[in-house]
Image 1 (cartoon, rainbow, N blue to C red):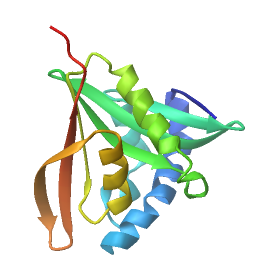
Image 2 (image 1 turned 135 degrees about the vertical axis):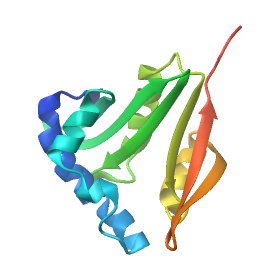
Image 3 (image 1 turned 180 degrees about the vertical axis):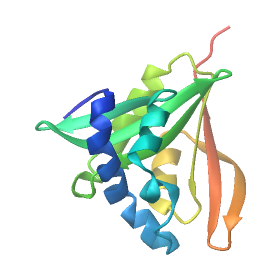
Length: 154
């Protein structure tokens, strides 16, 4: 398995993988119209202009991805996905480490997930992220925002 920068052509494979990976989240929240499930190819291509996308490749197939952008000394990470058949094998951790390395100049890293997404929260806590706020979206969804401070030397 290798992690590398994704090309715009890879989005044709990343988008269906995203929808497959987010089915478990949609089930938890009983909502199959969450943005990762309804995103269009045009929308993800638009994001490609402002975000860095990494891909995890195994035997020439994309099995995972993560995206992020840098703004005001912070790296904002989103849509960490791993194919369901490959989950629990450390690929998400490797993708997170790779995106943090890519944005090593960041003073802090930020991401969010739903409060019912226990596996995600556990992963992020293992990687050093700490909750700093919650935001209600609707009756069934509250987001938990988590951050990790980078190694800054003065």
